[in-house]
Length: 198
Image (cartoon, rainbow, N blue to C red):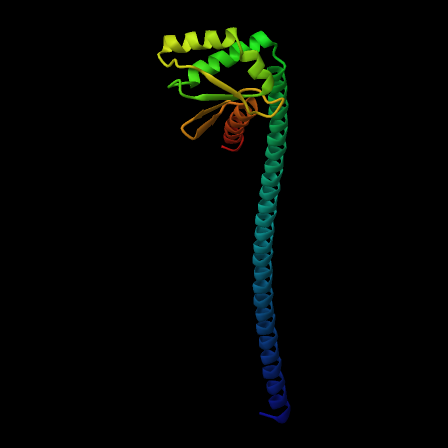
């Protein structure tokens, strides 16, 4: 073999090796590129999934926040309506004529007096209204109930207050209209709150 043939053989071998290396490099490049694309796709999907999850969470939080605000507004409206209704009812009761008011007082007193030893504390106006026939009728009703004794009525409520306080053995039972309305209002507000929030 001549020198020329040896050089050609070396060139051929070098070309084959170079071609083989180039092919291997391209295959490795394709593999690396494919892995990078797969990783990029996986990362993109993961980021998209996280963003969608966060967006859904934010949407739910906004919906919940809006609902809470709506419930607060509804509760405030119902409280306002309730307050106006109670105010109107209390004003109507305070504005009752003498006959209607005394009839109401008699029913409340008959149902509240259990021993006949109670002292009835009222306003000056109500004390004046109770003198005479009213006290006689009340005593007759209590006698039928079996709790009659001489009724003691004193003026001790502030002027303008309606209703009465029963005093017996150091116990004061408050049947003033303002107290009764306050109790009734608290009970109704609790009921309204249960219905709204429950």
